[in-house]
Length: 437
Ligand SMILES: NC(=O)C1=CN([C@@H]2O[C@H](COP(=O)(O)OP(=O)(O)OC[C@H]3O[C@@H](n4cnc5c(N)ncnc54)[C@H](O)[C@@H]3O)[C@@H](O)[C@H]2O)C=CC1
Ligand SMILES: O=C(O)[C@H]1O[C@H](OP(=O)(O)OP(=O)(O)OC[C@H]2O[C@@H](n3ccc(=O)[nH]c3=O)[C@H](O)[C@@H]2O)[C@H](O)[C@@H](O)[C@@H]1O
Image (cartoon, rainbow, N blue to C red):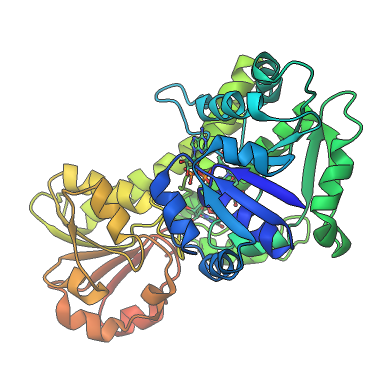
């Protein structure tokens, strides 16, 4: 089949490459011409495991290509996936849906009768009804264009795997739309045959499922972090609590790692957007607001622990920070907990040096006033404290005995819970981990 993917960031570029892997002819479209150029060379403009290989494989054969032209995209296919950004508006937490409306407005007059638009971006419930109006206002006279919504559940750093082997696929269709599901089943035929369940719903349900999924993932993380707060007060170990809870099949161990809390371009933004929309609808959002508050406290608590470790003040103190990405195996620094802590400490007067295996270029661009080091040992050299803030395996594999030679005072706070406490203590470090004795 021939398909387009409009908006080729983390979601869209991965979706386009995965659709080509399924055997479809795919044209990706993005307004950012630098991105389009990189993608046409078979390179992802960001770090994502396995994506460069897929892009290179399918751009080389011409099965996958990219353009900045709506006209080309509209002419290429009758099925158009939408993966443009839905960022947070400043202040209220509400979603900014302008990119979606722009994409529909620009695409609509160029579409032929029978075309299908399938949205994948994350949206608050009620968005598709508004997009339907935009579509109807701009579509060619006499052309009937269907609009469906299939929210995406991929995780960055597992994006290719999650797209090709999804836990489930959701498709929301408009009332009276009897044909989008059949088209969609053809697009996803191989994935459905392999066993991924497809849940077909009305539009509001599909929109809401995505918000609910991210709110639940955020809640699970904040729940275990609330237990971490309690563990610190009680002298208990949150990792053992999580281990024991996780064996209960109704709870499950996945997505319940305690630490510095959730960041990234999605969970914080989607929790805020979901909460905002729920309040507009008149729902009680006490639970969701607590989830966000607990998450904020993780960052504040880490800053406080650093202050405490350094004798009550960070002014003029050298602090090494391991990690800038919002999680391991990505260069994405959107709402990174590590950089939030780094900048808070710098604002409080500390001299902060940051290292990250993949996200240094993005961090440097966004936070040019922070100091950066090219390797983990260089970051700790001369510091009075090391903060471990992103869970890269390089950091848990590092040799604490070797590092103790470089740091001025061997003191570490493990905010991700992945350093081996015994190993660090035996190498002479004063070791503190969030939620653990
Ligand atoms: N990053 C992720 O892991 C996931 C993201 N999502 C959702 O997918 C959507 C996109 O997220 P990301 O890919 O992370 O964002 P992103 O910012 O990496 O990519 C968005 C892309 O859309 C392009 N764009 C903006 N306006 C456009 C327009 N009018 N026409 C064509 N292209 C346009 C931008 O240039 C950019 O390349 C969001 O709604 C997000 O919540 C959902 C699941 C996973
Ligand atoms: O809507 C989205 O964009 C995506 O958001 C998240 O995916 P992602 O942001 O890539 O990353 P996660 O692996 O969920 O991690 C999010 C944050 O939570 C933190 N986290 C994650 C898991 C955990 O157990 N504990 C924890 O603190 C991570 O360090 C990271 O900062 C969801 O996991 C995806 O299902 C969803 O599609």
